[in-house]
Image 1 (cartoon, rainbow, N blue to C red):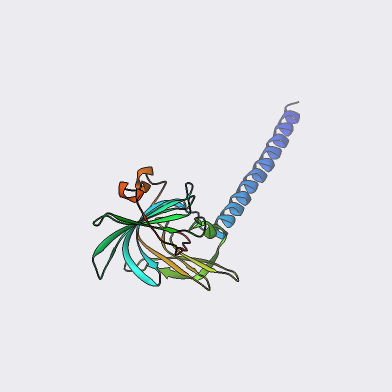
Image 2: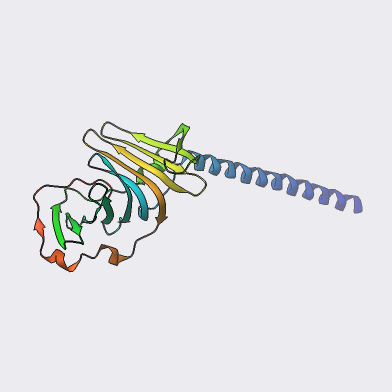
Length: 219
């Protein structure tokens, strides 16, 4: 009777060990698949953000622009200085109203331009982008390199240089037959900016309206 009981216990232990090993193998395989998928997936970056950046505007690189982007509410703001004149400007783009306000605080002037489209997300393409085999350089931080992600079609080419360590963008670039947009980040903070950043000054109630349309892609 003792031998029979021992045999039953041995069989039970053998079965438990077999199923335990299978369970461990399934877990290992699942983790391997998840890791593989994560490697293939591109960076996921919030399209609500605040940044200090160099931006290509109308064919010229304007350095150290303060940018605020509220993608959900379709609003952006840029604060910048024209190097030659040392004149500071603010531009507030309200995409829901299709209006862009060029604000000159010193002279209390406000010029409004019509916008031609809604605000596009800057980083949405990256999640499904292809990773280049070569790294990319930050452009502003000496010796810092990141991973280069890109996607191309007949209408546009999009590139992202990504800091894998801090998980923030180094720069993003969009090239189309008509436009060339480029943003190189000195500092980047994800999250929805404060709402009052997009408040228009009182003197914008009396605006100088311009008929020239402003084409903005991402800011």
